[in-house]
Image (cartoon, protein in one colour):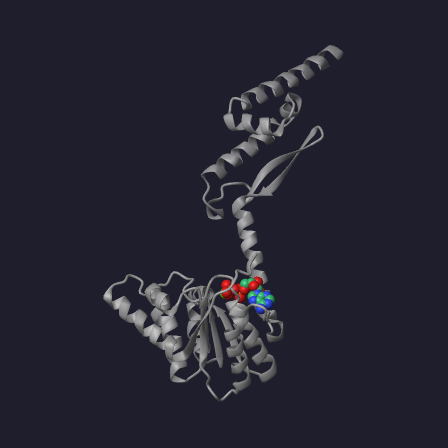
Length: 296
Ligand code: ADP
Ligand code: MG
């Protein structure tokens, strides 16, 4: 009995050893084992899990983004960590997953910043902002629901505070003067309209008629003729006809935006881009904000 038991154990040990040695014939497997600095014994105990890791890492090498993730848990790699004489395997986020999470959290922070922006919190130490802050203050003082003031086309470098400044004014107006305001991130607006065509008319009507509309980051999207002519063109035409206050921010100057909107640069596109620009000019005053990038 004792002898039989021994041979069985020996057999298993031999098999583990063989499997491990077979694993080691793969370059990636070798690399992983070397980087983990594990003993043969520990490796032998974990061959099949290590092979799973290696297979996932091979998937990752060909991968270009979460959309094509071939691993068991999307955006993650089954990966070992050495703890004393043990290997603990867990699902670790890959670089695409981390990027996605970062972008999500940035977006949430931006949304919170926009929702909480108030004029009293505007930092006035930066001299370059003074003309814009004066403009906003003046707008605030003059604003009455009936007087149809022109909005602002505020352009300038990324992170300089354009969105924040206009959001601060509009939040103030909504809270203190009961203005009906809508802040839309332009690329999101297009995505949102495209998602459900049955509600498109209603949504479009809302953007055409809301008291104050703030179109944030115009030019950040890849324009299509649909987005430019059917959506933006329609909204701006109505707002112009009804003299409704409209704000824009952009990383582009108006001249640069015109080029951006002339998608193919063919003559028809050039004319259509010009038409949008004329409406923006009718609706706004043009100011530039150049300042440090406040995004860390
Ligand atoms: P832009 O729209 O020009 O790219 P943002 O308005 O998004 O820039 O501002 C960048 C960051 O700086 C945001 O996190 C914003 O909340 C912050 N920020 C901008 N202006 C101010 C301010 N006056 N006081 C406090 N934080 C600000
Ligand atoms: Mg912005």
